[in-house]
Image (cartoon, rainbow, N blue to C red; front, side):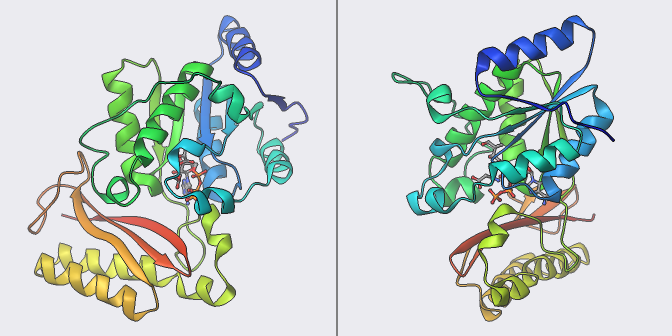
Length: 286
Ligand SMILES: Nc1ncnc2c1ncn2[C@@H]1O[C@H](COP(=O)(O)OP(=O)(O)OP(=O)(O)O)[C@@H](O)[C@H]1O
Ligand SMILES: CC(C)(CO)[C@@H](O)C(=O)[O-]
Ligand code: BAL
């Protein structure tokens, strides 16, 4: 696929001018919001976007207001040149890379808060995180005015927050979700994986293994609290330093599930390994 024509927009004005032109031409436009340091998980979203739409915009913006931890923000990998090359190769039409000043000019004073689905899980462990996510995703969706936007199920709670916001605010965009892309050993692809040492990286595969085994036990009707606690213990025994959460939630609305599920459920976890916070989730069959 020749894709020499990817352009980069740094301003809302330039992005909108391009998207408006496409829409006047009757083209269907997709957006894929990211924070860069791209891997095949991101590219799987791009592939889905290309299959569904005529033109694809990928945004790269490390959104400061969704980080509750300054060290995490400072350590977040920034690899714009390599990212641009990957996106060009993947057939992306526009890379949207706004500056922090473009997104949050002096005087910026608005926060989008989605109650309910943003509470607990990552929202409990990272105070303010989903206010930052909802605010920036709302801005990105309104800036691009694309027809559809693509998000990964790895960030399962984020998908719920975004869907709730889009419904509540009547944003004219279709939200599409894509399954979690994994490394050969099962670890969910994540830009944070590259912060692990070789030993930590080898150990990290325990997280999806533990989740998969726990999900099988739950589906088989084992006692839920025992299965969850043994999964948390297994992570600590394997060298994870702490577990922010390992919980079973209703896959449709994230309501806590306290007995063997009778409706689609998702086992969700966030755990720390070598100062890196890994998240993952798997479906629990009913
Ligand atoms: N392994 C994956 N499979 C599918 N989608 C993914 C995967 N990893 C990230 N995504 C999706 O890509 C989009 C951008 O995510 P983001 O830039 O935060 O990447 P990331 O690798 O999740 O980074 P990190 O977890 O370190 O913040 C989100 O919609 C996210 O859910
Ligand atoms: C959706 C997002 C790009 C908003 O900054 C981010 O939370 C992410 O990369 O998942
Ligand atoms: N993938 C979610 C972005 C974050 O961790 O802040």
